[in-house]
Length: 113
Length: 114
Image (tube, rainbow over all chains, first blue to last red; front, side, top):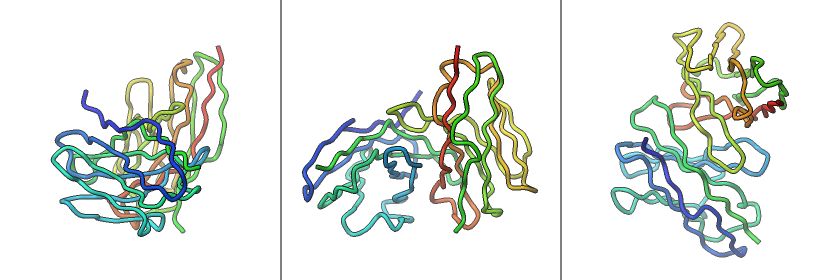
């Protein structure tokens, strides 16, 4: 069964450093998402992406965040200058059609020191 | 603002019992609801979904009930097994929130005891 994959599984970085989180969505999916989950809290929407552009972004997704689909398979989330409060699990998700279920990857645990 | 929330943060059940996890939503315009299971250190895993034109949907050992009158969603797990131990989230889509994102509830931890 096709799955969303994410790399790395864990990332430790120093405050102020740039990080890039990578995702490979399910191959025939057209809609892509990033969510984050701070430890012990609920999953929060960050950004949605369709047709090579951002469809919607949350208040969390400020100028330090960016997304890119550099080729036909990868979908990346970049944090330009990480802050301590960026420490969280970051989940990528994808779906095939509008209004359909989103399928999540296993997540990247980001720790900012 | 609009939100999706859960009545019980933790539910403990005996193996073999039936489990019921509840969710209240406040966005009456939402029309698509999903239950996800999240095991420790993993991503949310799709369990079952339901659209607002339905009241009930059944899967394998799971049933989702939707009561639009009181804006209530529940997940029933039959013959709960130790492997069902996880955090369960309800999520909504549509309505004022649009179809670009899922809005998650706070989660309920299900603990299954042998």
